[in-house]
Image 1 (cartoon, helix red, strand yellow):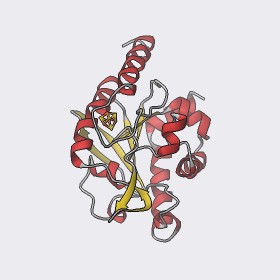
Image 2: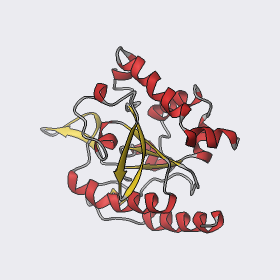
Image 3: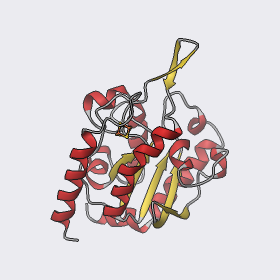
Image 4: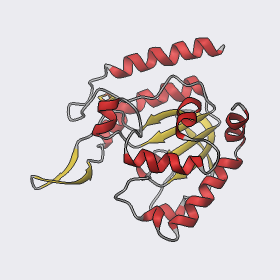
Length: 212
Ligand code: SF4
């Protein structure tokens, strides 16, 4: 499909996504990156309140950490946003975690029902882009593709699997949340390095670096 056509289709898709109000407990409007034609898809969990305000995925502190990781393998934030299609398991803010009426640190994990409803959007993105590599950020995103009990079982490895009827390569990363110590302590630190090393060596990553 010619690239202009694909950009138009992605833009149209994002326009429809923006007006989605299918989940009553979610806070929209839905967040999306640019209509980037890329061989790489990045899948996060769900946006936070700042991302909703700014309408940009990974726009706040977790994003700073995530982009600092990608910078070590050749792509700074701005370049990454222009070269990689950014999506998520759920596209609206789920709200803060609440227990017995008390608001806790961290965001509510989307329900299986919300994940199921929202998967229609990512399904179309996979169908349009046919990515050569999908980077999964955090356990919720990873678990949509691979069975995962512990991050140590999957981070640092690459996988080939089917996702929305498309067979492709997957490299999981930990969630870069400031509340997590996983990637700042061992064995997480070393496994994160191994995962970034695998992304750097992947043909799709090399392809977008060469296009710089
Ligand atoms: S989470 Fe997804 S399906 Fe639910 S309202 Fe937001 S965009 Fe729509």
